[in-house]
Length: 191
Image (tube, rainbow, N blue to C red; front, side, top):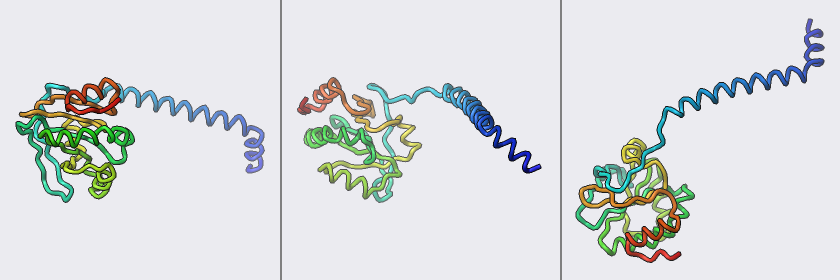
């Protein structure tokens, strides 16, 4: 009996392999259709827009203490949402290097916003590498990030008094966004 099965398999190995692959493809296609229909139920993430109101930012500092970032009557609070492992943040940080000191000089409050899962030592090293000082950093849970509609990195957010979004830039800045940010912050960003 074993010999007969072995003989059948060896004579039909190519046909069995093709049939197995065809069945696997059919199963994958069915799974793909199911996943696509489930994804279609979800809307793309909503980002904040100018004019939206945001509540005070509640998170933790680098040693785990509770922090609340309110929006005083200063010109604006600048929130820089980044991650040390984000390549787009890496691309934008040279621009932020120009914005941060000017914004601080002009009375803006500048706050770095990172995921709670980030290592505080890693964040400190990253900021030190970029020569950034004088910037508060708040660590937000994943739930808080979604509640504040932070779905991507980097995000540059200018929040005015009473928590009204004055301006928002998602991702790296193209030429028009660089010009808009230069006007907003009153800083020469070159290019």
